[in-house]
Length: 107
Picture 1 (cartoon, rainbow, N blue to C red):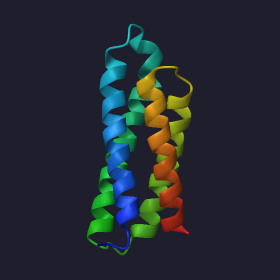
Picture 2: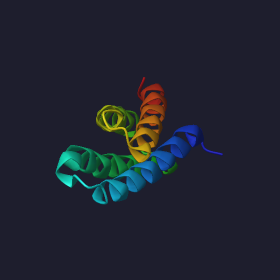
Picture 3: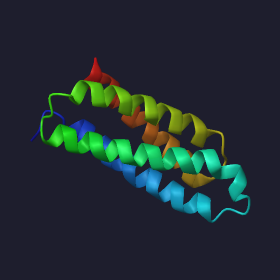
Picture 4: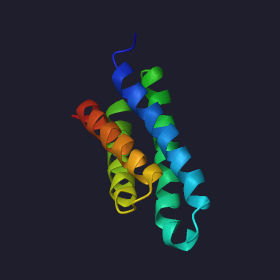
């Protein structure tokens, strides 16, 4: 098992939560109100997927990538937390957990 397995798992859970939130936001009645959430869901899912890949291959840039991932996850979590929808709240929770784990890697 990789030294990064906990972080990889958190990143992959975050990708799933962000993808779910992204899709659900597009179904909301007031999609315009969800634009920032949708945009950050995409950014977050992408950086989390890349971070998991970087950790799996033991990239020499893991600490830097994890630092950026934590920043994006924090921003996405902060945005999702503003919305009452279950999918947003679940996404915020996954984002905050991933940010926490990535900060530990980046330290």
